[in-house]
Image (cartoon, rainbow, N blue to C red; front, side):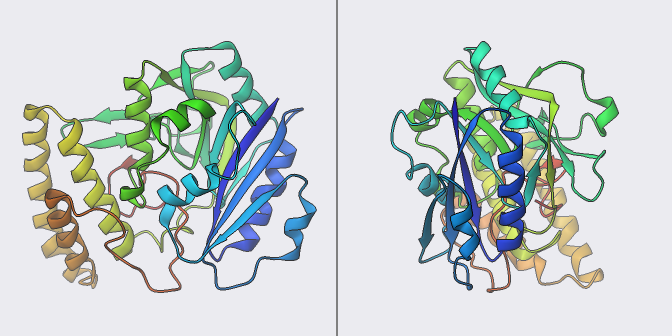
Length: 321
């Protein structure tokens, strides 16, 4: 059995090295096919890339973001090469056996479209960062820490409403059929949208609690309160909410959104974070007018290789990736 692994790098070669090492230890007899995209890093690709058998690599001339970057990685694989595709943050490491157990679950559950592992904070390995999610439509958020720690996780696999792009295994032909992530999202909420489309195809999303991934949170998107993260998470939250929510929930979401944006417009300057206010209002304008794509470019030091939606409740801007 072969599993393709989609990986993005942007100025994080050391973390990517750690991620690849953990991947090859996690296969448990499954053949790993790493498909690595470099999103326009400043440094040249390191020589150690040649140490990984079968790794395929492409360096892009611009930072295409999480959604398009993963789609370009997927294109490095020919149809029929691997029945399953594991989308993985490069700032994550994988517990031994995780890839094998996710694959085994999808093999025996034909209506499972996605299998997601439990994701823990790398700095606090018993604290859950994401383990599926409970959807809260009136706020257009996904509570990814319904089970807050390792000991609270269910003993057996459970259906869930969400799988984080930080670590998601999907049927390869399903990803191909759906066209992958939506390029116009750039980053954030592309994973929420993909999960919704998977379920509309009649498949389920499952959390596999005896698997594990450790996420180096806040490394990817410029910190817990960056204008970059706030812009894309809020803009895409509005766009997706307008697409999927029924009118009653949409009106409740608008009321919540007005209160949140209004209060943060006042609070951010008091916390010496005035620079976040224009990003937030630009996100609101672009979200409601559907100005999608890479509308907000960060300074060079900002690293873009996140996985999916933000924070404990996906949709809370900049709680980390």
